[in-house]
Image (cartoon, rainbow, N blue to C red; front, side, top):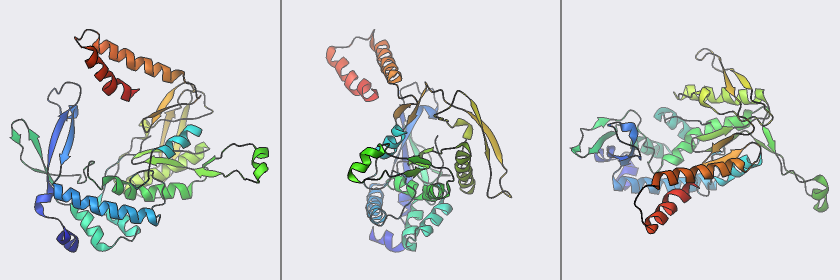
Length: 333
């Protein structure tokens, strides 16, 4: 392990990983999309990467190196903050580009040996598949960073920090969050209500862009599209969900302007605003624009109705039913 750090490289055996395709709940039907692949990496490699990740995370946290407010990948990070903020008041996806990842390291002034070592972890990688008939032949990886890699959450935070920092610093119409405490109550103890500008809530690659006007949201989407282009990331804006607090069920048009017009053309598209009575999901939590609990009760009924329909004609003991209820139904509830 010390030699790996000295030479900023890893043994060739560590570049070969095995993938076990775990069946999903529905039938396999000879389709890989019906499996959930898990990558098995060399144990010594994972241990070394874990040590590097822990040490690097402590430094980044202690000195507040990352400024983009991604609520993941660092000690003490939690989904609570973005969920609570959204409760008071789309997804950004993509893959790593190793050249751009190195630029991110340079931006944060990583030591060159550390940058070289991390890049070496994901260079010239090969995978093979574990099947009932043995291991397949190895193949070269086109995308070299596995989602289950120990350092992957931290790298994701580092990779997207330039975008999130730019979104926060350049926003012309951020949403202003405040406590809403009446002034006469604040004045009792000479307190002042703190106004906090919010432009995005991000946990890993799950991000919500927030603005107080249509033009402000267009600006944020334009910045994101420039970032995607530079990083060779494909984003389907038509799959975004638009939450508009004062909206009727309107079709909203967006016109994105670009800072690199010689390489990327302007773009226009429309999104249907969610109905005020509808709900949407963020980080596994459901939100309703009207703050009504009715949609929650409806979801609970659907979960139990589906469970009852599945087990109604099965020969199950009370203990088995209790087990299924505890392990399958309650986590969903």
